Amino acid sequence: MWERTAVEQAAAVRSGEVSAVELVRAHLARIAEVNPRYNAVTQLPADQALDEARALDRRRAAGEDVGPLAGVPFTVKESIAIRGVPTTHGAVRLKDFTAVEDAPPVAALRAAGAIPIGHGNMPTLTLAGMHTRSELFGDTVNPWDARVTPGGTSGGDAVAVATGMAALGLGNDSGGSVRIPASFCGLAGLKPTYGRFAADHRLRPEDEPPLGAQLFVVDGPLARTVGDLWPAFEALAGASPRDPRAVPVPPRGEPVPRRVAVVADPGGSGVHPTVRAAVVRAADALSDAGYDVVDVPDVPLLDEALSAYGHLLMTEFAPAWPVVRTLLGEGGHRYIEHSMAKAAPVDVAEYLRLTGVVLAVKRAWAGFLDRYPLLLGPVFTEPPVEPGVESRDAAGHHLVTTAMRLCTATSFAGLPAVAVPTGLADGLPTGVQLVGRAYREDVCLDAASAVEERFGVLAPVGASGG
Image 1 (cartoon, one colour):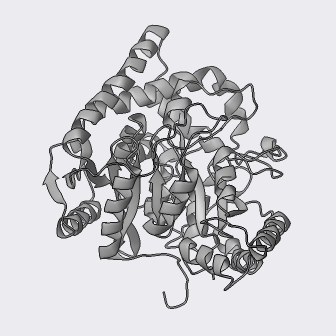
Image 2 (image 1 turned 135 degrees about the horizontal axis):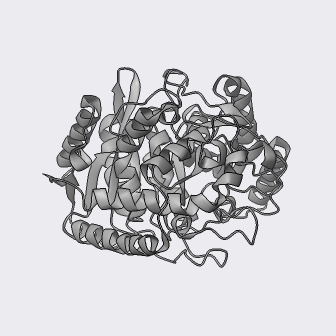
C-alpha cells in the first residue's frame, strides 16, 4: 500500500478495500525498514496514528464521510506543530517543547481524513543552511545518492515521501524550502500564494513574527505526483480565525490564456547544462500539450528582490542573533553569518525603504503575469550539491544562494509555484518550477500535470519494479 499514490490510498480506505489501520501499519513498517538508512522521520507517534486510524475506521463503518484523504499518512516538518508531540525545530533546547494543538495546516489535513505519522527532519531552526542537518537528529540522506544533499529546509519530509514512508509531506517554503527538496528528491511540491493557507509558526502565543517572516514563509505539501498535490491543496486552502492573513479564495479560478514565459537563466548568472536541458524539455512538453510557449529575456526586478529579501531578513535576525546563535549547535551559525556578510543589517530608514520594494516587486510581477499567466524556470540552477556546501565558506554560500535565486524572488513576491520532476540526469532527479499569478495555484498545477504526463513519476525510490 505504501507504493500507491495518496489518491489511491484514500480511495482504498473509503471503499473498504483496506482499513486505515492497515494503511498506517504498512507505512510504519516501511519507516522501520528504511528510516535507519535515510534518517528522514525524527519522531514517530505511532500509537497516536493508530488510534486515529481506528477512529476513522469506526466512522467509515458507521457510514460517515471520512474525507478525500481518508487514512493517508503524512509527515510534518519539525517546525510545524502536531498536538501531543514536541515541535523541536531540530534544536536540543526545544526537544521537550510539546505542542498543545495542531498547527492550522495539520488540523486542515486531519479534517480531510489524513493522519500525521511523524515529524520530518530539518536544518536546526531552519537557519543552519539548506542541507537537512539538525543539531538534535543529525543528517538526512538523499535516497538517490548519499553524496548529495536532499535539499531543505523541508528535506526530511521530502525523503520520507520519496521513499514511501509517507504518502504526503507538509513542509514550508520561504525561498525554496519545499521546491528545492522536491526537485532534489524527484517529487512534486507546492509553494502556495501568500495568504492561501492558514499557518502559525510562533513558538509561543506572544512571539509574533516580524514582517519578513509574516510575508515570505508559507506552508506547502510535497507528494510523489501532481495529482496528489490537488486534494492536499484543496484541504489546506481557505480562511481561518487562527491566521488573519488567510483568505477564502476558491481553489479554481476563471480560465486564463495558456501562455508560458520561459526563463532558463534568471538574471543571467549562469545555469548548468543539465538544468537548462530540463527547462527546455519541460517547455517542449508544454508546447506539445497546447501551451503557447515564449522565451523571454528575464523575470521582473530580480536583483532588487534578492537584495531587499536579504537585507530585510538579516535586519530582522540581527537583534536576536546573539541568543539564537547559541541554539544552533556546532557549526549551525555559519549559514546566517555568511548571509549577514552578504546582506548586512540596515538602519531604520533603509528598512522602511525596503518595505516599499516589496510592493514594487509584487507590482512588477503582476504586470508580467498579466501578459504571461505562467513562468517556467529552474528550481535550482545547479545539480544537487554536496551536503552543507552552503555553510562551508563564502564561495559555497554564494553558489547555493545564487542557484536558488528564482525560488527566493518568487517567495519575496508571494507567488504560487509548483516544482515537478523532468526525469533523471547522471542518475539524479531533475526538475523545473511553474510560477503563476497570485491565488492561481490551479493554473500551476494543471501545467505541472502536463509536464508530469510527459516525463512520468520518479518516486517512490526503492519500490518494487522501480
